Length: 436
Image (cartoon, rainbow, N blue to C red; front, side):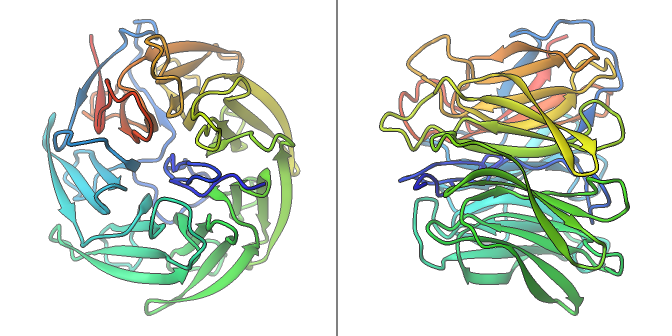
């Protein structure tokens, strides 16, 4: 299947004769090395307002919009440890990572961190060196659009503890990298290991890199296939061992689970797949949707770049693989959503139930009624009702959720990848605050 080659989101995705972007940040279970700003967010304050287009008030944060934005990923975290949540931005057009710092409650200022990084696609944070400071992990594609050359890399923006970051190339001259995450993948891991997804183009792979200490890593291949979008680590079996779940979309459209034994060995199992070569897988996250103690898999298919006319298709939507234990999963269709990307699990209204939020990057933006942000509200019995949150801004490729103002309520942050017209209602980075 000659479909994708990442643009992200998370992420994250441009398809076939096009590119894939690995955007969306992934929720993690088990014992990840560092999970500041986990993608699973729970509101502590009950909200009575219904989920609809009046629930949030969107406004831009960070630098003003110039041209058409190519935001490939976002990450919410408290990077400087001052108690206020910030937003990290991967900008695929400007080839840089920036920090939208919340300098005081509700006031944001954006600055570059580190040096240029070609084709940044995915962001994570972790204390990789045991310094007590968060480093920034960057998956670099080299270039966003399709290329089979070995131009990918993993770059660490090393934090000196004074808000100064220095580029350190950990892996380079490999197939285009679209995902990286730090996690202790073995029981004897002292410092975080790394999971790396290489979308590549005609060639790609998934590998994990064992942290040997002193800044050295040993590489272990898990899958010899191109097309990895996301590959988060989580304890999927509840046995204390970290596993890896990967969404792969190029020659195949599959969800793989690599079951770990805690000793660095992983067994591959395909837990879901589609025979539709135009399926358009676009994002995956891990979350305990029904709160039974077993992490589930949520994924979207909404990539529309590979079609002759970019845009939505009737099979696009949001999906839930319910973890039944013992390596078995039950498939559920959460709902239809044209151009769906970047699924996250979040209790939006403080109801105690996990809702699912997703964006649309590839919709028909010439239609004023096209939806760009959707919530699927959980009634407490995992019956999901679609709730339109917004029709603009458009071209949303990634969404993250957090209590941005420490008041017990959940806000959203979105990023746009404006790849095809019309561009009448595009944004760069948008904060979605409560109206009430």
